[in-house]
Image 1: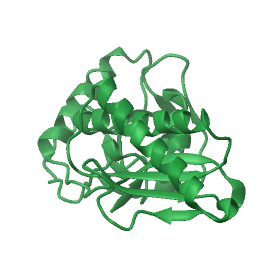
Image 2: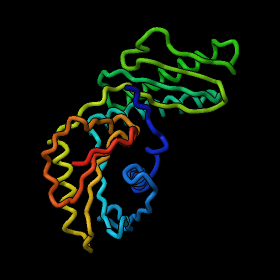
Image 3: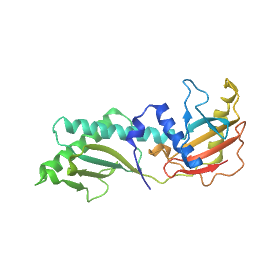
Image 4: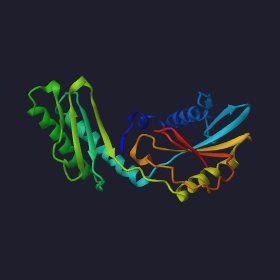
Amino acid sequence: MAIKSNMTLLQRPKRETERIICEQFIESYFRKKVDIYQLPSDPPDFTFTSDDHEISVELTRLIMPQVKQKEAAQKRIVELAHAKFKSTSDLQLRVSVTFSRRGIEYSNKFMDSQADEISKNVFRICQETDDIDSIIYKNSKRPFNEYIDTLWVSSLNKFESWELINAFRVPHTDNEFIQKQINKKAEKLSSYEKKFDENWLLIASNLGYLSSAMRFDFIEPNLNRKNFDKIFLYEARSKEIWQV
């Protein structure tokens, strides 16, 4: 399964990102737009009204810390490569880098060396082409190097974008991991300044970046809801919803 980094979502502030996720979930759940309110200070994260019921929503985004660290390093390598290339050329290119599943180092020296190799090869591709406005390149031999599977370069459409694309088998999420998220969020309920008719917990995955890619279809129905009235598992990309 190809997971493409959603740069627009990643670059947004956390609270704005969470609002987008919550709005999309509620629209999918009710099959219509519903006004939600984000309080200046948590908790709860959001509130909305349905059938004269005032409902609170706690939102948690599922992130795999180890994958997040690796993804951040890969993203940094692509950013460095872009900066290196732009220091020597003003060409507008679309460049996509797919890293292998092999582990990588997190040292500045390693990231700089990988960025340097990407930048130099993109520059070489530009120099070797007969028509600079019609570049379309993908390395024919895979992998590109020990840590990178593919390098794709295009000068078509005069559009500039250097991005990370990862191929990844989406793992199943287990009950223990989900229960920990429920327990953590349930601690906030006692600090609510007012009583709501219902308290919901929204657990979201597949948010457009690799470290959030998880599947819920093997979750067993024996989770402890604590004091939440409803708990939802939400795959943001497919908009599939499971109720615990």
